[in-house]
Length: 95
Image 1 (cartoon, rainbow, N blue to C red):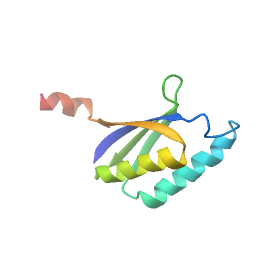
Image 2 (tube, rainbow, N blue to C red):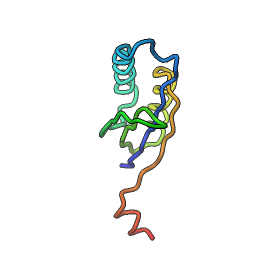
Image 3 (cartoon, rainbow, N blue to C red):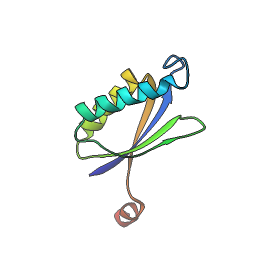
Image 4 (cartoon, rainbow, N blue to C red):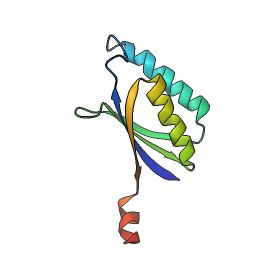
C-alpha cells in the first residue's frame, strides 16, 4: 500500500466563521469515507504556514487518492498538493 501526503489550503470563501469549518470537515470526511473505500486515513494535522492541513493517507490505487483529493477540492473548498511518500529505509534500500 502506498503512502500519500495531501497538503490543503482553505479558500477564503470556504467558511465564514472558524466553527463553521467543523461542519464542512465532517461533510467532506463522510463523503470520502463513502466514495473512496480504498483510502485509509492515517493522520491529519492542522499546520501554521503555507498549508492549513496535512493528511497522511494510504491506498493501493492512485485513482482512489485522486477521487479523495477532488472531493477535498470541490466540497472542502481547498487547494491541494499531493505527494507520494516513500518510507526512508525503503528509499535508501532502492539507491
